[in-house]
Image (cartoon, rainbow, N blue to C red; front, top):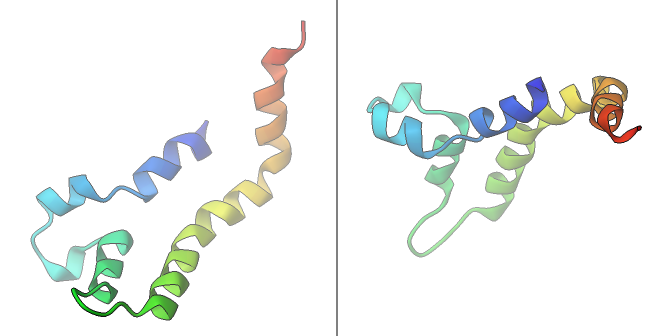
Length: 78
């Protein structure tokens, strides 16, 4: 349950965009928008940042995958 609730919160973009005005307090997805320009985009740095942003949730899933899968399949058994 924690993984499924954490992913949307971790990747939230719009809510912090509206509420946070300081550049020092921006979330990671908002900070990565710096690398997207009108005419050029630094794809290497952007994809590296996106990979690092997904890393904590991925590691959490790997560490708890046994419990995660057993929780999902628990209701499928009659």
